[in-house]
Length: 217
Image (cartoon, rainbow, N blue to C red; front, side, top):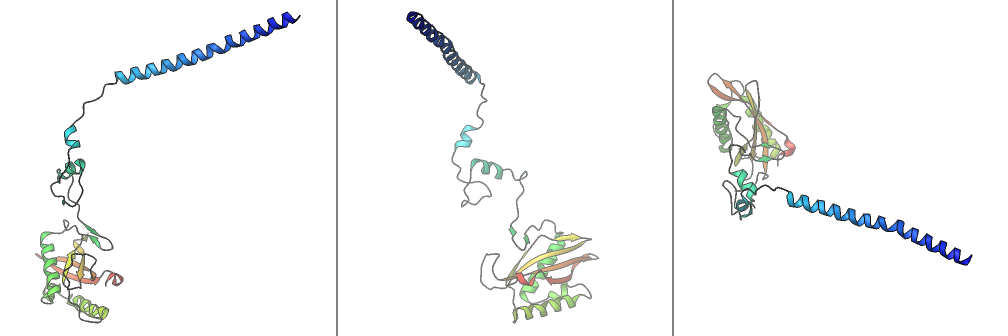
């Protein structure tokens, strides 16, 4: 009886190992097969040739139209060289307007510049006003003196992108009230709208008003 038990135990152990070993062998064979397939795919991949490899790796010293203080890359240098595809982007003053003047009629822009220069110098601005609209300039000067509690003399100005409707230009203009030679667009200033309309063959100032007195300083 004891011999029979020993024989049964030995049979069960042999049966257990015979059932477990094939799984391990199968797992190893599967792993080897996947690795083989992966290596084969990697070796058979057809890679495209590198285009302009030297150009993309070279050190870029600068690019046309880009300040040397601006850090450039091969990509930015390539983009800056195609000016027709990428037109220049005018600066934008937050709280004021874009400085894009491309929408202006040539003569309208000349009239606007001449009128603004007359306001800066304090002479001859009346001559640019449309007939019957001189009162708008008088009221503007009165409000300007009341706002600053003194006679304010403009030192310079910048012209913004206009709103155009029915042939009338609504022109944003920033006048600087500081005599300091500063290039900052945030220097003491007052923002106004100047309205231009065409009368026969010439452009005239129809109205001038403050954009927002809270922005003036």
